[in-house]
Image (tube, rainbow, N blue to C red; front, side):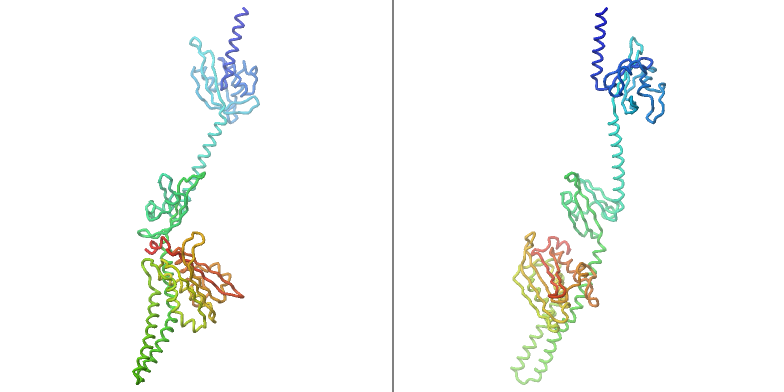
Length: 484
C-alpha cells in the first residue's frame, strides 16, 4: 500500500510544480465553489497562504465586492455560471481583492472540468491587468486631450483674420476659411514662402496676384529636429499698398512744391541777366559788343534749359531699373539748390569718389537724395556746411559690392524723442512745412533696392545729423517684380 501512495504523492507534486511554473494565477473549484488547488502565482498575487485558500470559498475570499464597494453575492458571480451552465468564461475583466483589502483589475478565464460527461469542477486562470488598464485609460485621456487641443487649434486657425495654410511633407495643404476666400484654398502660385518653409527656412514675401497684393510669412514645422511640414500666414495688403502709394505720391508732390521756390529763384536770375543783355544789345552800336552780349545771353538760356531738364527728371519714373552714375545724379540734384545755398550762406563740401554704376530706379533714388539734401538745408536755416560724400563700399557681412552716400549737416540735431520714430510715417520736426513722409518714403525706396539707410545725430556741442545710404551695385533681385 505504501508504494502506490508514494506514487500518487509524487504525481501530485509533479502537477503542482507544473502549476507553479505557469505565468498566470490558477486555482481550482469544486461544485460548491471551494478551492481544490492553487498555484504559486495566485498565492503571491492574493497575499493568502495556500492553506488559507484550499477548502475555502474563493468568491468570499477574493471576489466579494463590486468595484464601487457594493457586496457581490456569489449567486451573481459569472465564475459560478461555468458550473451552473457548463459554459466556459473567456477574458472577463473584473476587480479582485487581496488579503489586505486592496484591489486590482484582472482578466479572468474559467473552464469546466468534465469527467465522464459530468462537470466535476472549474479551473480558473487570471492575470493582473491593472497597469495595462491604467495605460489604456491614460491613452484614452491623452487621445481625448489631443482631440480637444486639436479642436481648439482648429478654432484658433479658423478665427484668424488671415489666410492660414498648413502643408505636410507629402504636399497636402490645409487652409482656413479666410484662405479659401482669398485664393480658393489653394496656395498662390506667385508665392514661394510655403515651399521655402518645407525646405526648413523662414521667409517673407509680398507679391501681386491677379486681383490683390498678398504678404506671406512662412515657417517650417519641426518635431524632434525633423521637418513635419510648413505653415504660411497670408495677409491681404491691397488696401495698405494703395494707401502707401497714395502717401508716396503725396510726398513726391510736396517735394516738388517745395522745390518750386528754389527753381523759380534759379530761373529768375538768368532771366534777369538775359533781359539786361537784350537791353544792352539794343543800345549797342558795335557788332563785336552785340555778339559778346548775345553769347552771354545764350549761356544764360542754356542754364535755364539745364534747370528745366533737372526739374523734369525729378518726377521721371522708369518702368525698369537702369545702371546710373551716382556721382552725376548727385551733381544734377545739387544744381537745383545753388541759389538756395547762396542765399542761406551754406557752404557745400562735395567729394565724390569714382564708383561703379548702380542698378536703380533713377527717379526714386533722385527723390531719396533730394529728401536728404532738403532736410539738411532746412536744419541749417542760419547757415553752415553741407557735407556730401560718395565712395564704393562692400557690405560688411555678405561682401556684396555697393556704394555709400553720406549727407551731413551741422544743424541742431534731432531731439531724442524723435530719434526712435525717425523713419515712421507722419513724424516730422518741421511742424508747419513738413509732411512727415520724406524719410519714411526714402527708407521704403532704399530697402526696395536692397539697401540700408541709417541716421546718427548729436545735440549740443559739435551738433548735427548724418544720414548714410548704402546701395548694392546690382540692386535687389526682386526690384523688377516689385516695380511690375
